[in-house]
Length: 238
Length: 263
Image (cartoon, rainbow over all chains, first blue to last red; front, side, top):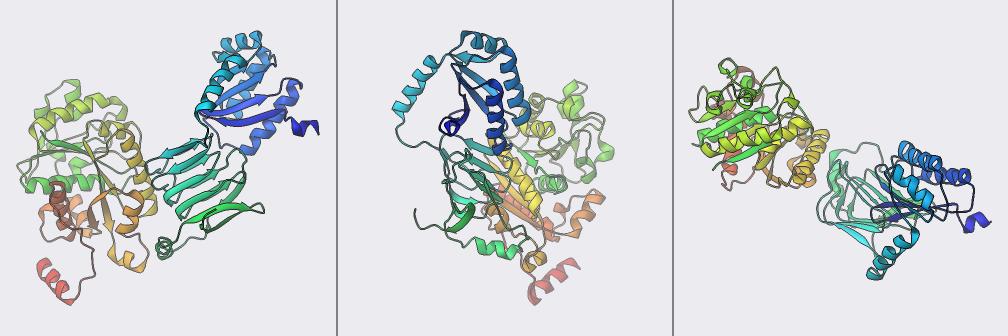
């Protein structure tokens, strides 16, 4: 029960990527297992993302730190950008591994400043069409696209995804596990949708080109999760 | 000062080289001075399609290495006075040239010619980067199929990343009969996805293949359907407002005229 109130590991979005918080008390092996358990759920969704590793009061040996770095990089393609630690030793080890390291106090100060400025929900606005091969990520809130998302393009957001255009590519809303996230598009004809860890695919039976023309006439639609399934329906306000 | 266009597509085999040769020819017929550059180093084709293979002595590689000056490397077209070709080296590869060197060649050519058309290799790697380096604008060529449009979309994204925002689109090899049956994307489908300015739709035409094999760009033959389409593309590039015709099945009257013209 105690574990549920205080998870060993927390993964949160922050401006430049993900923040991984390790609880200081439990043994390292347990924390590492919990981390693997958490990150496995996300699959390769975050490959290439920067990591803020927040170990708080925990003192990591240089071996432990090295193991975490290897695990994150080799298994998930995640790169540690900065270590937050209150232990002088851990920070020294981090610097030997060429990782920037700061104490919690220092980091918190900047965090509070940021939160004082931004009181409302944060969203990233993309003012162009997202084309094949482009991936736009935002782990601190929603993404709004003023344009289309073409086949082969991808949007990943921890919050909602709103496309003022045609969504033909891939959209992953609530990518940190929030299944209450929604995806809205003027025309919703995606290759793949994901909300939280729930996957929805477009019917893979190949449609004739005529059917696709009919899709142009569709109204604004919303995708959301009902009973662990992604449901798409006409958007009539929330 | 002229303007340099990179002709590119992402996917191979959609007709970049054919478009470059014919567009260059059509522009020169309209009285413009044109240089076409083959940027597909190691796999040169443009000289063959233009029927100039036997006249190539120096290549862009020779210019870069200082074996000859730029003027001397240009090959004059067989039929058109104001059309020239800068051929690609066959024995080097894409990595033997730097974007900066391409830029310099383009700058120099723009001083004297109205149009510089750069025939890009397929792909998005260094060959494409070199081809795009000296360009002021881009002509993206696609065929109306899903894979080609996908790659064209990728290329447009990469061009925009380089701040190359003057992008025009040519849809090549459109088969009107297939579109009519619903078996091929029509021009509206393609423009819907790519959302850039359409400057031409070239119909599927056997005459293009024949002319490429003979090394005589079709654009000089006034009766071929595709030739007229290329002429209109050239006119649009020169700023003329010509509506893009929807190709229709010929009715008995236009069909008759067509047959009379072709006979």
